Image (cartoon, rainbow, N blue to C red; front, side):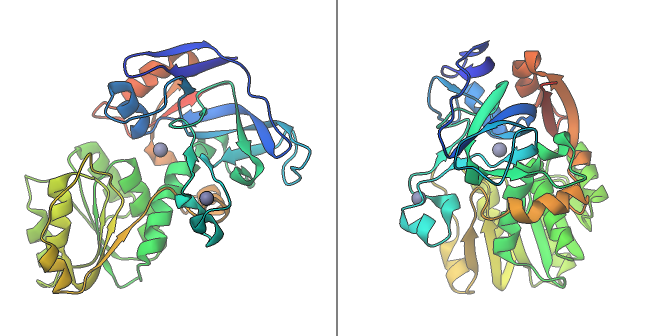
Length: 336
Ligand SMILES: [Zn+2]
Ligand SMILES: [Zn+2]
């Protein structure tokens, strides 16, 4: 089969690769659509470490080609979405139901063979049958939507909360859609790219802010009568935005960290402690597919507006490069 293989930064090629062989507990999937993530672009440029020699990509939908002997919940020919996590099932995180942070976790497209290939395989527990109404294009975006949804579930907003979403990248926009689905009325989104901020407005943001044209802290204080936001969700991962999140949250409020900084960051810790701010983090997604499948299919979490480009698989490298363009949000790769 053809696959996009990562042999180190600057050494990514579409080439022949062995078709995956499945064990009794695994599912072989024929890829229909895959989506490009920021991680893929960072791997290409060398700013995100990954294992050499693996197939890239972790967001995909497809059709079941074959199932192992012990897999009973999906059958060949069925449309499915894959969760890109392989877990051990034995560590304390797994056993306490927090398998998304399994100590022995392997992430597809980073540590194990991914989905930018004609076929990919997953353990049965990571394969979910698509509900009626979920198109293969939408199915490819269930993974990043699940990441946003999981972060919002952990932050647990209530409809009366003022929520600040820092960052208008794909994850920031999926977070926004999830916060809207939770019924929040006052959502402030900050970001740099105007197209994404316009999109945020359409998706339900009460106000969008583009620093440095506008001062986010001033806007948040104006919108909250000087007290600060109930919840700040940081989906940028830069040291300055992380430090800023501390100044935006109200006393006894919550900060949810989703953005991943490249290294250690410093912020005003005392300002957090003296105001009993809950500092939360979120990574990947937990028990999200079962729940958001339906929400995506019913367009309550509408992933369609975020699709800005589609490339055929032969142009997979161009698709990854394009994901960095100003006007791009989510770039799909089509295998049909
Ligand atoms: Zn991703
Ligand atoms: Zn584990």
